[in-house]
Structures are given as C-alpha cells and as structure tokens.
Image 1 (tube, rainbow, N blue to C red):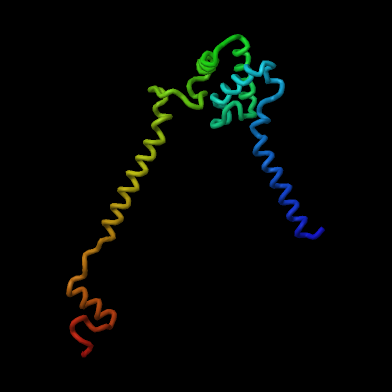
Image 2: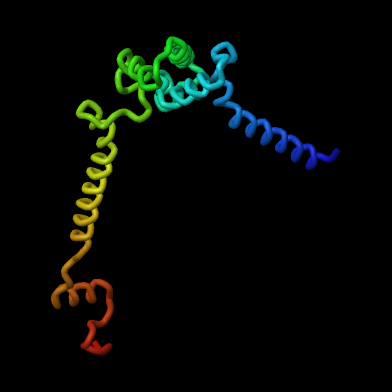
Length: 169
C-alpha cells in the first residue's frame, strides 16, 4: 500500500467516524433505562423533551443533552406522564419549578419581552450606530476645492507650471 493510498484510507476512516459521531450524538443522550415501555408515552415524552431547555447546556433541548440535569428532567417528564398528566400539565409542572427560561420557546409576555425583543433592539442600535458613523465619515471626506492661491502655492511646491499659464517661465 502506497503512502498516498494510506493517507486517503485514513482520511476516509476519519470522515466516516466524524459523520457517525455527528449523527449519533443526540441519540446517545437518551439512556435505555429512561425509555418507557409504552411507545406512545415514549413518543409524547420525546416531544416534550424537545421543547424543554437543558439549563446546563443553555441552547440544547433535554432530548439532545447528556448533562445530569437533563437526565433528571427527562425522568421527571416520564414520571409525570406515567402519573397521567397531559403534555401541557407536564410543561406547566416543569415551568413552575424552573421558570419560563426552561422552555425553548418561551411565551411572549412582559417577563420575556427582553428575550424576544432584545436581539431586535441590538440589531436596531447597531444599524443606527453604523448609519451615524458612515454619514459622519462621508461628510468629513468631502473637502472644498482649492482656491486659486492654493493652486498656485501647490504648483510652486511641486515645481510644475500652473494651468492656463503655459509652460514658459
């Protein structure tokens, strides 16, 4: 086997390994001991898991997270479903314990306005700052034309003849 073919084989193996890890990463978060025997209840639990935020990972659902707190929340969701709660009751129970922040899509109310409108306000402030900056920069770049005296002085300094006076001296 040549060096080139060994390198190609190694790169192929690494690519396959990386693809498998990317695809199977979220699947590894749910442990077999968490899964419910009833497939319909498990499907409901997985749907609820996808709507709840892992408080450790910040922007991952508890369905995708492998954190211990996410594991505990998944177990809590399944216990509530086994107790007969509806999906809405399970989410209300978790929100009552952890607040609206635990929802990946929090409700639009006065307590969460900053979450929803904050990025828009930051974008607006950045656009306004950029507009002011470019307007000032454009205004500063517009310079008045040289007067006749300034043209004469420039020509004298550069050692060239003045326009309109010919090349005689």
